[in-house]
Image 1: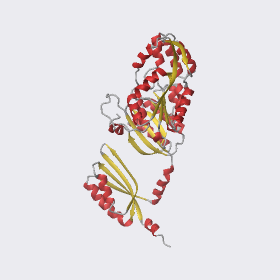
Image 2 (image 1 turned 120 degrees about the horizontal axis):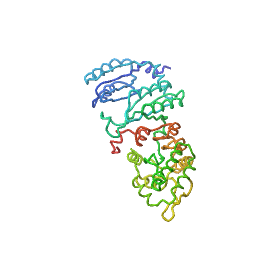
Image 3 (image 1 turned 60 degrees about the vertical axis):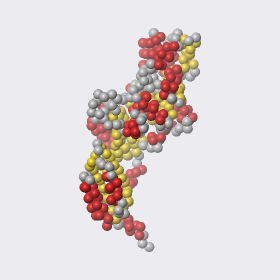
Image 4 (image 1 turned 135 degrees about the vertical axis):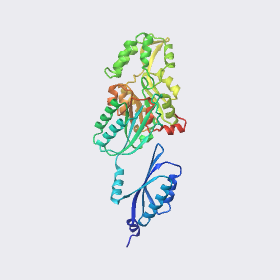
Length: 417
């Protein structure tokens, strides 16, 4: 018995149609209306628009007898609108090979900085090429960049859609971080899966992350022991001494400080660049937000009220008769405790651990950064950056939004900038 369907398919051609030139309203509608007059199947379609210059591609299958007429009609239509048309015949073998690649791993590589240069992008794409990764899409996440580089809070971010399997992902990460250090750019390399698009819980360190200070240092200055406490704090954040040991030593030095000092410090906390914007967007999009801090609950609760956060876990200072006793109440929130709390909150919120994010700067943040689905070192100490999968060192905390795939134009439309 003759299979008429197979015969019909044998009598077809595959054609890639590419249109370039000035973008204008109605162009795509006109092209597709022309194609709609014929028996055509759309196999792939894509469009990019850079500075009002269009690059539009469409892969079609049509009967042999229609190919000439399709080409003639499209050529007339696009030429009359001032665009350039190109046709590329595609063999069935090439098409089948292209289809077979769809099972390969997909990743998103995000580049972020105050500005992006050809040198940065060249170095980045060279590394991807060495890893046998293919770039199949590029998009800009930040708004249009002004020429005046002195303007405040300029940000530049693009993301590459990448397909393939890295030959040595650890080597690739090390090479990207080397470029980051040398060329003032930040990177995030994430698997492009359902979890990346459905993050639901984000946990922040507080001191030197949400705020631009270590609160314990502020308290120590008021107590007249600033230099002693600051020295211990820096040792702890660099991972040179155990956090619990450093915590006990520092708190003991605060003995006798008046409780009222904490309110004054809280009301004058220096917020990190981008915090207000970041919190506004995260709340609007339904993220659960937690502070997991080796600092103090008094200040964490102040931020909780200010930004409408969902959880605060930090250390409780003991106060008697309006004075700090030099002791603390309850369990110390150190690195392992932060990781355990992240898991606990994720369980409470019924969120898969792969849907979680952690952001921090100190050595005691490393366990939660490693536990979260996405761990981000923020303006972190060298030891932390060296052990994190992604880092932000060039811009403010709202850079986290770009690692989550948010686009400035989408936020601007909804009043979230």
